[in-house]
Image (cartoon, rainbow, N blue to C red; front, side, top):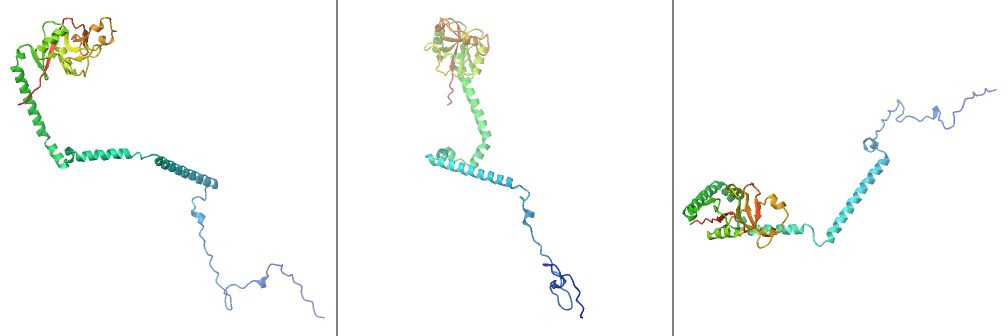
Length: 287
């Protein structure tokens, strides 16, 4: 009887046995094959700046950017519609004015002929102009002094200050008589046109003097008798603060009270006798 073959365990299903193992690549007689190298891959996530940012924040950022873009577009559309609705652009008038100014300047010979070279020459000549002005001033002073020296007024109590002759009376007259006296000497009761003249007259006076200021024509409308403009006033504080009395309409003439410096104008009845000061402006004419 033939002996029974030895029983062996069969390999599990689905798992290859040792005999089922496929031959290695490159195998053949005489030796084994060489193992192949693994291929490397580049992961884009390694350089992504947003890989650690939550998706929610990314969506919020995109929403904000979109909102700003919409606002900018709406503003641009609004500006365009506004400019389209008006008849002319806001810059048109300034540009027209600029063009007119430039045209006038180019037509003006005093501007058109100027050049940097000519302006530089004029700057160099400034010392000459200054010397000529000083010479002219000396000539005017000389003519002025000669005019006064030859005048009969130089012997009648008249004095010089700036460009005027002044007469300070020694007796008293009403304002009207004092003005008539001054007019008979080709002068008027003094007008005061600046601080320097006010200070000069105040220093010269020792008691109240009539000046050529009156509102006899229109109450409150003070005018100088020589026609000068009332450019500055030196009314005393008491004269401005006191209420008008029943006789105030009679106080139509002004005088200086030298006992107080600065603001020392007062008004009084024109028929009150006071000393006075005449003034004649002198115009110098060169031959």
